[in-house]
Length: 314
Image 1 (tube, rainbow, N blue to C red):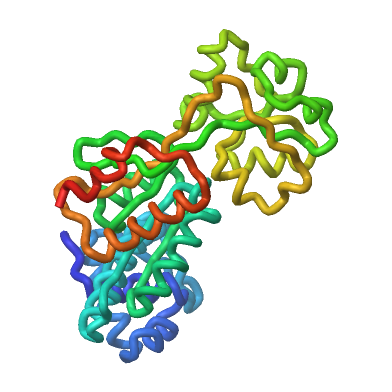
Image 2: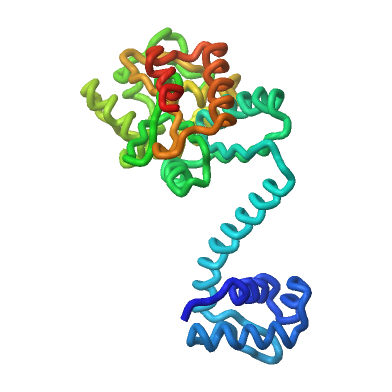
């Protein structure tokens, strides 16, 4: 049998506080009312949610599994309530942004700061997410705009180039290869290489680069992101290929040296949004700030017709 929102609310309150009395205080209702509703909930689901031992409640394994899903429902209800509050207070608008970590460490916060100077009444949310979560957030329409440094393909998503950068090599500051101006993959072969899972989008780019250069890819360790790789290089654990966004935003650049790599692939940063929903004026204003910022910072730009394509959809 389906649970209603009140039953879900009471179940969550008991799970969160660990007691009937705690739930009653959280919900501002009497303890008998909580007990009755909890009993009705157990009857409706057809199994016990709590074991009562010496006056204390202990969640059953079934309750713990149910609680995991209830949390998702609760968070969704919270978002609805927040949106209703924003609308009732006549806010100028809400802008939800997500990005991949590499570009989200420095460039996106800079763009947000510039945007806020011109739009102080806009409420903003910003999250750095990995590839899969970022795509899911966009498809669930929980974000207005995504910025990612990797290719993203989905029939429901519109992808527009923003700017480009290259793979570069990062080395410990005292490494012997720092004496060279430009490196090749062959130059890296004798040294411990920090790389990425080949099944990951970034790992796939590195893997294809090695394959095109007919070089063996034999990392001593695999990490989850270029930021992880920079940390390990800074500690002297090896050398790594990372994107320029990660390098520019890395605080510990004095502890490592960056060198270009011959024939390194170009990485394109992309703007991503749901194809069937036009960008709001607020989102377009943020995109304009971001485009101006990447020009000012000297990132490589895609062809002009690609940069302007996002405006041509409206």
